[in-house]
Structure formats: C-alpha cells, structure tokens
Image 1 (cartoon, rainbow, N blue to C red):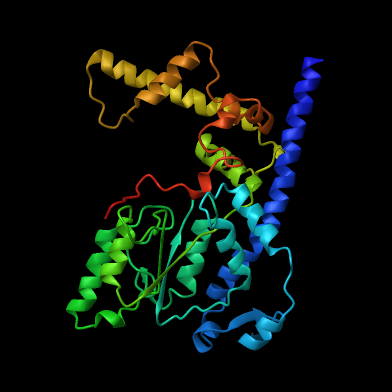
Image 2 (image 1 turned 120 degrees about the horizontal axis):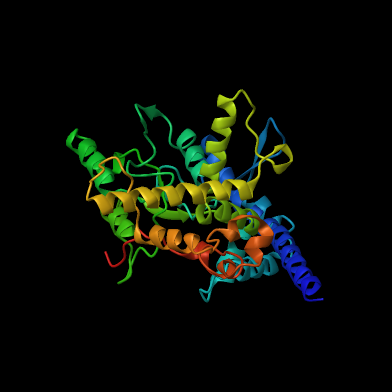
Length: 359
C-alpha cells in the first residue's frame, strides 16, 4: 500500500510538471517572439523605428502603424497571463504583473542608432544560442574574431569582462573615433545589468552609463519552459551527464558504432553514472597515494574537499549520485528541493556568482 501511494505521489508530481510547463510555455512564448522579432528583423526596424513589424507570411513582411495597432483587437487575458508568469517564476517585485502585462501592448520602439541592449543570459535558458543569433544579426559585420556590433567582453556562457570592453573602447577612441560613433549595439553574458542606479547598482550598469552615456540601455532575458529547464539543469549541472554521454559516444565511434542519445538505442544513464563514480574514486585513490608517498604529481588532477567527501561516502556504501539515475530517482530524492530546482523557487531571477553590486 505504501509503495502504491508513493507511486501515485510521484505520478502526480510528474503530471504537475507537464501541465505547469505547458501553461508557462504558452504564457512566455509571446514575450520571446517579440524579442526574436527585433533581432531577426533588424533591417526592417532600422528603416522603421517606432513601428511594429511582423511577418505576414514566409516571404514578406508588413508595417503596422500606430493607429492600426491601437485599433487592433486585444485579448482580454493578458493580465491573467502576466500574473501566471510572475507566479511561476516567483517574480516578487510589486509591479511585476503590471510590467509583464505592458509588454503585450507596448510598441517595439527599438532605435538601432540610440539603443544598446544587454542580454542577461540566465542559467540554462537557451542563452548560448541566443548570443549566437545576436552575433549573426545586429552584431554584423564581423571583423576578425569579433563582431562589430557586439561589445568585446561579452561571453555566451561567462561573466562580462569589463577590462576587455574598456580596452576596445579606448582603442577606438585613440584612433580618433568619437564616443557617440562607437559601433556597439549589444552585449551578452551571465552578468546582469539591473539595477543601474542606486546603492545596489551593478558594476556593469555603472560601466555602461560611464562608457556609453549617449545610449539608452535596455535589458533583455529569456525564460524557458520549466520542464525543459529543469531537465537541462539536472542532466548538465547537477549530474554532468552531457560529458559522460559525449565520452561514451566517442568510444562507440572508435569502435565503428554510431552515436546515440536514447535508451532505446542502448544508452544506459545509470551505467554512465556508475562510470562517473568509478572515475572519481580512481582520482581520489591516486591523490591519496601521492599524498602518502609525498610525491608531487604535476599532471595529477587535484581533488577538492567536496570530491573527497563524495569518495568517502561512496566507499561507505552511499550512492551519492542516486538522484542522477532517472527522473523517478530525482523526484524521490531530498536533493530535488535543493540546488537547481526551478519550479517553485526564484532561480530564474537570481544573479550569477560573478555579479558585483554597489558600483
């Protein structure tokens, strides 16, 4: 009876994941499409700033002027959708719902000559791909390894490097370029931009105000369907399975076999977890051996204190990566409520560990 009850509980949680994921996906997709329209239709926005551009079919576009936009029929459910998004992502600002609702009515007023936008790459939100889209659209033309429109110091999956940015700005200024002629239109990083003012202002916000005073700063970000988001965090961040799958597939290729990514084709996640644990135990063994003999192996990987604790637990019979073996194991594990759980905690709004506040 207890097993059946536990099974029903897990099934209900899994169903909740799917339902909540579907609802949130519908809620935020409109927001993401607006951002994508600005980037993908860069030339059209450049020619028609202040107007709303949309694709009428695969080949042509139209311009909807302000009067037609104001007369367009508006769905009465935007406030409800905004409230749902704010609730799902634990957005606690008093005016969060109001701001989210406004985006459904606000015209796209992006001005490529005046605006500079910073893409805040929230963890596991698809931001690496979006950074690439920025490079290949408003970042063009490409000059060497850089894109002219993207401020150096931007990294698809890293902190914003203020020193690199300042070096490039000073380089152009020394060449005689006026500050208001600097070519940068965007930047991206895990580092957030807001707040820009006040005692808790970010270093990045203060930097942009000082170095690009002629620009209107605009911050953008992406939210991801919570089920996909949670699965990505679980596989890559909590368990490191991406690396293990790639390593296993490389071994298959060396043996003349095709790469696979499905259990149906022979991919055994639990087996990969076992391999990961054995590799760590071997690493700990070699480190202990080096310590015991007072031999300094320069090429020997170091073992941090958390890995030593994990090795100790494994030797004592504790499966430290049990939550990585399947979705059911994760849902039944205490670790579900820790680390990168995203459904009911404010992960999406948190700041990167490299974020600096107070100027």
